Image: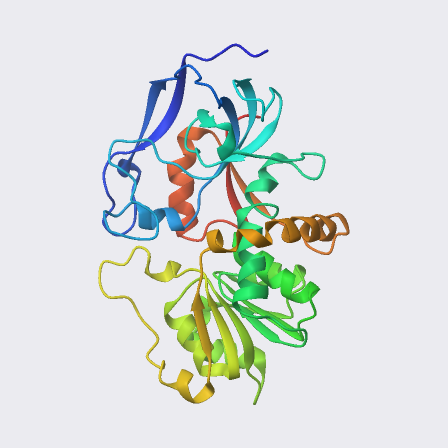
Length: 340
């Protein structure tokens, strides 16, 4: 049995960002670890996730998730080892996923955790390919965008955590062509290594021209998995085939905007093309979790899908990693390793 810790380091929101976050918006702090109540467990976090959606929660605005409170510890996905338990549901030594990241130790209700099998993959994979990230890609592609074999698929931010999986899933499920956009020539080349048929660096010119070039004359897209919004969404609408489907997963191009962001100016063309644009939250598709987990485990084991991680060591470096994530410094999932 591990010694019960008395204190835990944690990251608090010191101030609300205006535009791009800066290190001064965060503060490394320490708090006492409370004793367990019935039904609770103590988790020693092994790794935590930083994700683009967290930027919106740093604003004091109404959204689908409540904003982070000032001078309070942040939260988010984490995976860790149970080191004390007052619940029959979890034993010491279990590895669980939960929602109290941004801290070294978490006291959490056992019912708010999911036990994971680390014989399938390293613990951090359950924050990414085998976790909510992977489920987001799967649900967005198969249900929201109603993917069908033979579709031509375009994925933006395709070197990121969700995008890289969405593109590979499309390939495995029988897409005719899979195209990705990324923020550098090296990332575009990496997408081709992952099995994308074509990829472009969106810094190289207007998104519509770049997408049209890789599609070829007279060709369009059937599915767009949107992680970016803005100019790339506009390009996808422009080059969508009739009855095309667009899954609106994220709009990272606007997350740090201090003025009105670039929006698609061609929405009217969605009428004539009879396009479907549908926003989604992965929390509404939890019924797919079992199906997804079984399939993804098989694809990973067979080497049909690969997943990348950009690993940063140390809780104290989590704010910088989050800022780097928003600037596109990651390839695949950005993970903060807390214990190694």
